[in-house]
Length: 267
Image (cartoon, rainbow, N blue to C red; front, side, top):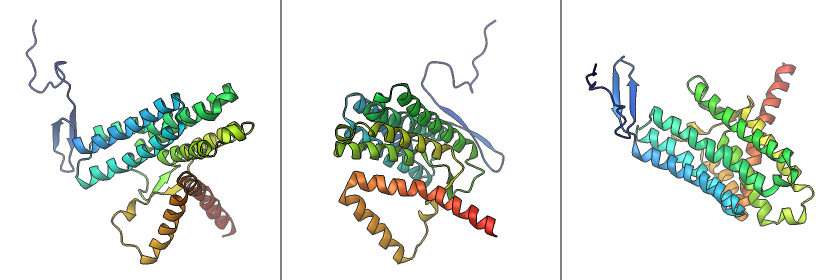
């Protein structure tokens, strides 16, 4: 018995198409075909940067790999803001962004660190790299399920782009200063500790300020002074400056949490 084609069947197998159902507050349900071009272009650029970082690391071009991860973080920070500014948020875009983040900030930093310094540690090296990768996956999955129930002013756990920047900046500093040549006996162990620490911070419950509320907020003029100072330090020596600022932000969360706990006990 032949079946009549359903006019609402968008999955005939003859086309490449995305169909999304959107539920409005009024209870009306609408169906949309296609995807928003602009934010997904930036997500694709971030994904390409992460992929390029992996290819560069496989070829021994570690500085290029580190820079590619920073470029991926830049594009990743832009796609969400562009989607909000142009009112082009979508479920497809959110899922695509998470998959892109997994490649660029989960797999790429781990492989870059492994090929640069963790290889000599043998099984311990790839276990440390895997710990970072699975921590990034947990971090992204937790973010997706908690996105509507947490305070948007804070990240729960270190954001994966920040963790990736720590690893990439350390590799960049190491390549610039030839650390693997001059200190080959302890750089692999230090890299392993940094990679595992970054992974644990991602899956921790430590709160980190997200800076999202500053997008449209006025701040006192004096706030610009430390920002200019930080910018000057970073530009004086780019890889060391980025590493220092990233580590400062990463440790600020646990220090703040410890301070709040101590104050709570005293009270």
